[in-house]
Image (cartoon, rainbow, N blue to C red; front, side):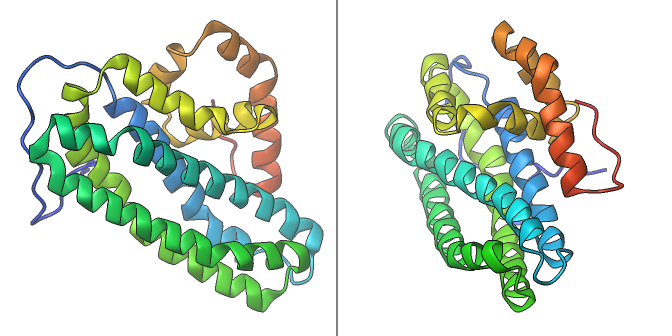
Length: 239
């Protein structure tokens, strides 16, 4: 079976700079990207399966999707502010690919802005017509993300590992994490673990001990409770 994170025909990667690897970004980025793909793949069906005018259900589903939107926005904002300029300066051979990443981000921002008012109105009403428009908007977003998230891991992260220090890479992740409400951090961690059952274990083991302890103590139950309400009857992933 082909790895999702593989180059498609006609795609070319930038040259990898010489020298030692300064950070280990591939696993981190795959885990984060898998969580976005995991969430947005289910979003259209979650919206369309919500009973018409059941505003309690639409608010619950809509809140879940809005959290993913906010996390994606912050993730891209972190890269825009902390990654792209450094890559262009330190690895000029990657400049064209960085330009493509910037263009992808602009398109994702446009699609999120298109979905936002629909999501707000649908959350409050569960209007089925709005729901269908909203589900279609997220299907369009998912198609863009499938290309962007894959190509970023395949083409850009290997260069970043050679020119971005471990401290700078950690700051990139911290910048994104700081924007997540503290009350939702453990639930979102559960989502990442569920989306990458193999790769996420390494990431989990590298988390600070207090976070691992709190996830095992309360976070796992929070994630499982949300999962059961979102997907009744679906087996709960082991995290």
